Length: 168
Image 1 (cartoon, helix red, strand yellow):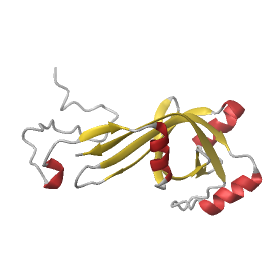
Image 2 (cartoon, rainbow, N blue to C red):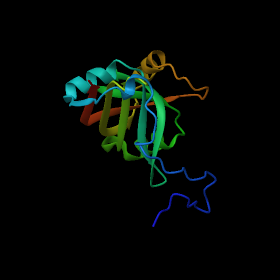
Image 3 (cartoon, rainbow, N blue to C red):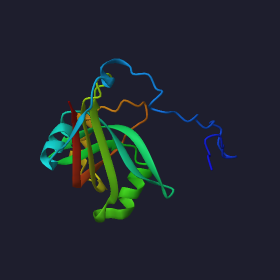
Image 4 (cartoon, one colour):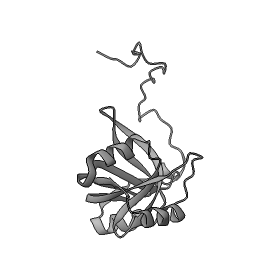
C-alpha cells in the first residue's frame, strides 16, 4: 500500500510526490561518474572537523531527536560550542553533571556541484563549561552567528569519531 499522498492530520506540509532516479535529469559534474567512499580514521576525521567552524549538534528534546546548526571550536580534541543557558541542550548537560549527556556532532565539507568532500560524525558526552576563565576564552574565540545571547558553552568529549571522504 502506497502512502505517497497520505498526509497526517497534524501536518501542514503536503507529502512529496515519489521520484525516480531513472527519470531525474543529470545536472553538472555531479552526474559524470561514480564516487568512491573512503573511511577516515578517528584522527583524520577530527583533523577535518577542526578545519571548519560550522556543524550540527544532535541531542534529545522532549524524547525526540533535535538537530541545530552551530559553530564550534576544536580544543584539545574536544568540540566546544556556545549556547544559551536556558537551552534544552545546556539544561540536559547541566542536569547530568559529570556524566554528561550523549550527543552527536556532525560537520562536513561537500562541494554542491561535484559532490566531493567529506563528512564527520563525533558521538560522545556533552558537559557544560563551568570554569569562568574557559568560558570567557570561548566567548572570545567562538563568534555566534545568531542574535541570541550565548552566555554558556558546552564541551563534547568524543568517544566515537567516524568519517568518510567522497572522492572519484
